[in-house]
Length: 338
Image (cartoon, rainbow, N blue to C red; front, side, top):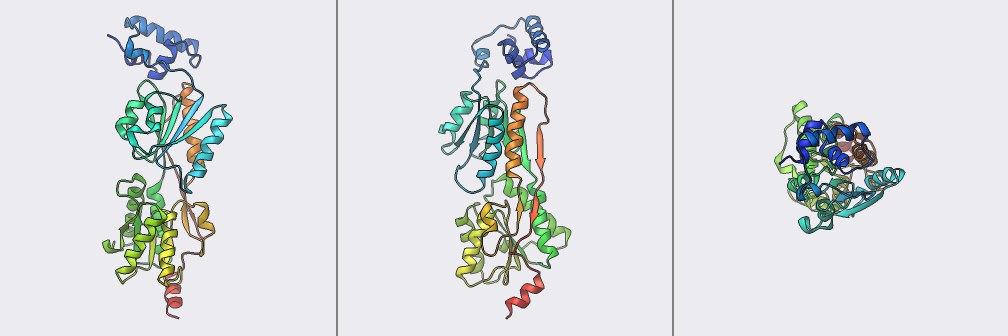
């Protein structure tokens, strides 16, 4: 028995477009509708229970699924999504994926309660993502690589950002550079670590495993990792923290141990959250285009809903933001010896 996928293949359109055409959805042109209907007739296609599940009622709602709705990182991302959804007359639902398979977020995906979704949540598995995309639900996945039909990708160039952060420290004369990263299974963390390692290799510098510690992208995780680093008794010249929250936690640990930033040790973060500008000293960091990521992601969904063809993957650049938490290595040594 022919399926909707067979019809789409013969007609040369996406499955979602074939579904819209056969269900008299106004999103497709009359020419495309006719082409799909001819393909269905040629294949003797008939709706069945499974095929009928592909028919979805328009909800005028986009979902933004996050692993955690708290934390300073998400505000600009949400604003970027919200501005574009509002401009297109749609509603936005931001929901947490806490609870995994049992979460409300997964129900929204599997029951097609929205017209499209943006996913930034590691606990939404690749399997669930691919299942949710069946039937033409457009999904944009952030900072992950999930290969499948109707799944599109927007990511920040984390590897280049990690390289920029590390090379900036090297250009300031630092030769002993630590990396305090996020969770080992984090796609972002893996890419930032690769960038760090590339910068070291390019400059013929050694990676000291004792100075490379794991945090969890939280302020508390950065604080704990920094306390462990201090306890080893020998500090590097500079630290690249995997994100700003951990860097700010590290500042607190240094302050408690009378270690001055940047006089005794230089640090750089990643993200450029709002607080980075207002801590003392202000934090040098790598800026992510958070608003742009959100705006681009939902813009892609609207293009897909209109039946347009788009690229499967998009990568946005980062930017170095220089503030007060990094000084020249020789300057650090002279000040620290006073």
